[in-house]
Structures are given as C-alpha cells and as structure tokens.
Length: 132
Image (cartoon, rainbow, N blue to C red; front, side, top):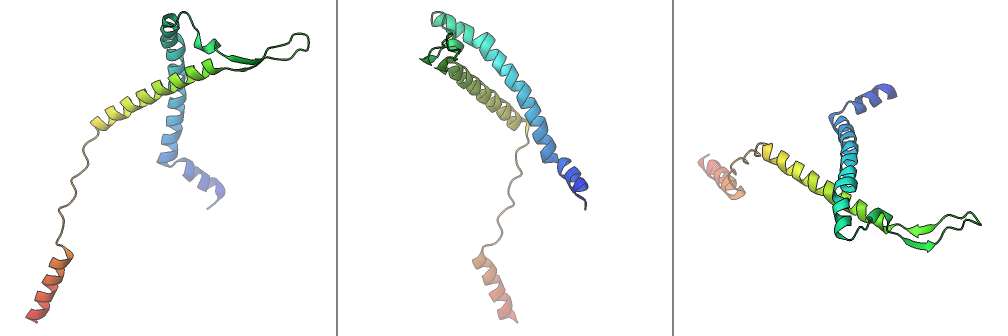
C-alpha cells in the first residue's frame, strides 16, 4: 500500500473527520464567546465596578520611553481576567451541550444476566462425570 493511499485512508477515518469538524466548530464558537464576554458581559461588570475596563488593567514594570524608543513592559492581568471568564463560559456551555446530548441518547443496554458461578459449573461437571 502506498503512502498516499495510507494517508487517504487515515484522513477518511470517522474520528479524524469528527475531530476536524469539532476544531472548526470550536473555533467559531470561541469567537462567539469572545464577543459575548467582551461586548455583553464585561461592560456591565465594568459599570458595576465603577467603569473599570478589565482589558486595560496592567501592572507596568517599565514605562515606555519615547527618547530611547523602548516599549512599555507590563503584566496585562486584565486580559488574563477576560480570558478566564471566557474559559468559564465556554466550559459551562460545553457542559450544557454535552448534558443535553446525553439526555437525547438512548440508555445503554442492560448487561446480560450473570451466568452460573464457577462453583456451579464445577458441580455440574462433577455430577456429569459421576453419571458416567
């Protein structure tokens, strides 16, 4: 089998295609959640906290210097706060989607009834041997 045909077989497997679809949908969903957090959730939170825009919060380690043309060195913890909120929203949304899908799935089949125990099988074999 050639490498090209092996590669084609690999790509056409169900799991790879499902993964590709999941990545594309996840990317689009991430953009929606980013917009939700940045444009809908964070403005009221900023309003309640006195107009604080979390994305602008930072700890400046070294200010920018125009004379030497050096950029500002800062820890942008506000962007991190936004990212954590986005992560929590994505996690909650995925949880709710998986929970809804699990409700739609049929219950797993009941396990087969247990067979005779080893002792019962051995007793049956012994009884058959005694008959002969």
